[in-house]
View (spheres, rainbow, N blue to C red):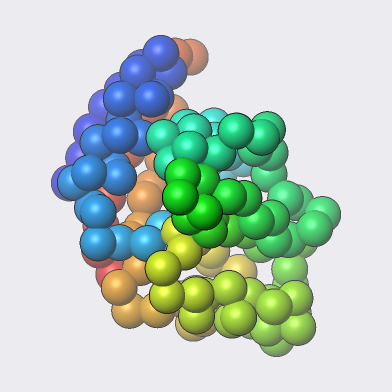
Length: 139
């Protein structure tokens, strides 16, 4: 499934993703640097009721937020990890086992083998300065 959108439609796209794929709690974002992974995750968190600022946890690897009705939301950035072993040491597997939590993952290519089979994969690419294309695929 593919969808193009302008950056001013990001809230609408976040709502669409959460409604269309409401059973998918683990979402992996595949894209090069600067394609909009964190921006889209920020919009998803906002739709889920996160009030605090959302930024990429590049150095901490894992950030936890609280959404509406105490919904747990984890945002992980695996950019600094070297391999699956480092991901395990960082506690990634524990987060992926959370049953009712949303888990958003940037740079999942570092440890693809750790992702559950029902991970929703989102590929982001740039069309032009204000337009992105989103490709969605269930693993």
